[in-house]
Amino acid sequence: METRSDNRVVRVYEALLAHYGPQHWWPAETPYEVIVGTILTQNTAWVNVEKAIANFGSELRPEAVATMNPDRLKELIRPAGFFNQKASYLQTVTGWFARYGYDAQIIRQVEPGRLRTELLSLRGVGPETADSILLYAFGFPSFVVDAYTMRLCARYPFEVGKDYERVKAFFERRLPVSAAVYNSLHALIVIHAKAYCRRKPLCEDCPLAQRCERQGT
DNA sequence: CGCCAGGGCCATA
DNA sequence: TATGGCCATGGC
Image (cartoon, rainbow, N blue to C red; front, side, top):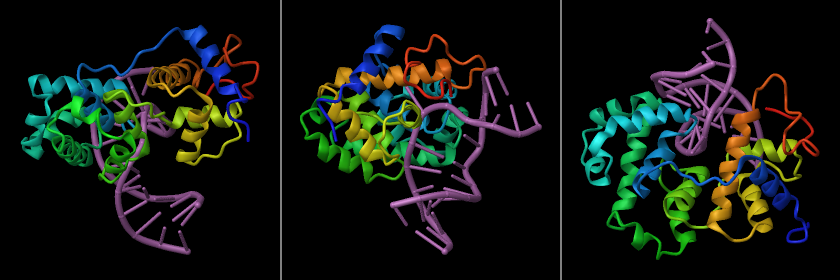
């Protein structure tokens, strides 16, 4: 098991960075908006999340969502799909945020492992959502693994299984402990997947073409 | 039309 | 541990 001596992950990162340019996520104004986005985007196209986010108007604040009528909340997030469960999930994670006074600065003082455990205990927050909140809402160096990351691993190929925690550790062991790097690489993986996923011609110019067995998808 | 998107929960074996 | 059904909308 190579780790630091294994720079394949860094090479992929550098190739994607050179091809697509620096990425800075998450598209949101506040940490709470990131949290809302992580729930709404679960198995959902981002364009639909944007519609739902827009419906909130000035009520995209934890204080407003916490006390909002569930039926009204469902109506606001309807475009994002799965609105029955997601309305419940949103109020649950908002309740978690309330434990810290809705204060991102306070949360940033807490040990991230403890926050991760708390988040994972919430109904509606799985590993990807928890890591997205830690990384993109609060800036902790917690690498996010999503379906695109799994595909990259399978096709590049990186020989790591499909267990979430194993894949997460695989990347974290091979990258500098840096929220900026984790943020950038996850964003690049998604950008890359969107660019090449399900394209007919398949990528002659794919930045990973040298090693990627089956380009595209 | 059918497919699926920046998942997660739950029941079943 | 590991599948499979389920949730729901909108773009293509």
